[in-house]
Length: 469
Image 1 (cartoon, rainbow, N blue to C red):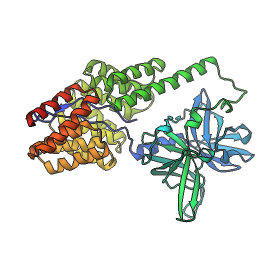
Image 2 (tube, one colour):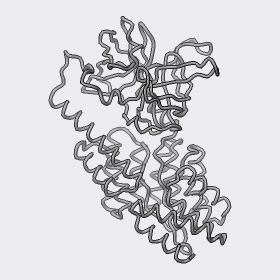
Image 3 (cartoon, rainbow, N blue to C red):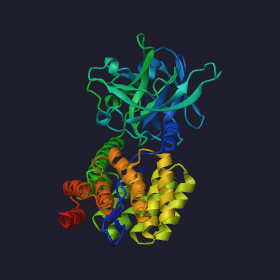
């Protein structure tokens, strides 16, 4: 899981008295998303072939969602999980979600399998990066079914989709992958893949999926996903309800962090934790919000709790990341770097870990090392606005002004609301004695900082404006 909060600011130079703050990317690397996909994706064989996704667990009962057309053929089916184990089900157990090409079925196991984290597909826009995974049928290259992970982006969103197929994307998928997950760049389930439509005029093929919201928000006419023979206990229903509500508050907090509404985010994370005391992500993000409201001790406590929970859940990389930020908050910069290095060793493709380590290295004035970290983050994630913004700041330190300007321009292209990038670019223009462009950037930065409630940086931007006017 990647951090959406930014670490507190550090001076990029007493002579210019501005700040560099990483808006640490929400996006995971494609390798990280693939790791999630492999754990939640199941292979379906039998009367028909397809793919499914684990979306719920209650005790030893797991719920899998797939396409209705995958399991509508009468007969027996095998669900194969990530560990290679197989579970037998019958088509009679499949329950269709009314009005769309989706179905749910269940299997029972004492094994601990990862459950997909669901996101709101209504928030997707054209151009959003998505990933599709599934078990393709044999073809000319492979005589057996094989796992495929395909990256791409949303090309169209349909308002009146047939059978629910409202997500159109350019990921190349193959037969057998129907029922597989469509994941966003945080590894969250936003849809179920299931359709390919060829256009005879252009010879192009559109691939389509069904938004997961059809499962998240079932209508009263939909059939319950739990078999009637296994009614849920009142305790399990309450726990499920609490966890669902906790996730809603967590997502609300995430959205507020993106708007720099740190107090609002803290309140939402508090509610999430009250409903689910084991929500490591809520503790971690709350710690980041505390850092941004100058409450280091509360940040440390929240981040340490997150690290403890991540460790308990077997997520060592996440634990080291949280502990690294806690050590940063304690001003133990070398300890923070060591923790981030452990996180990187566990996952060398973790772009945000490089951003974090590079940011801490700025505090130690290790500019060349920080530059190397931001370079690697950009290689892993070319759309990481934070990495470009911070690399631009480091290049300013190193007096590489043209390169700094190019980086800051790219950061702004990727995130037009990244206030610190405008501020940093303003200093580059000031250094080049381009007064009008510097003023324009400081004014833009001031407006954004004010909108985001960052009074300290707002006042610093106003100071620069007064000096230039």
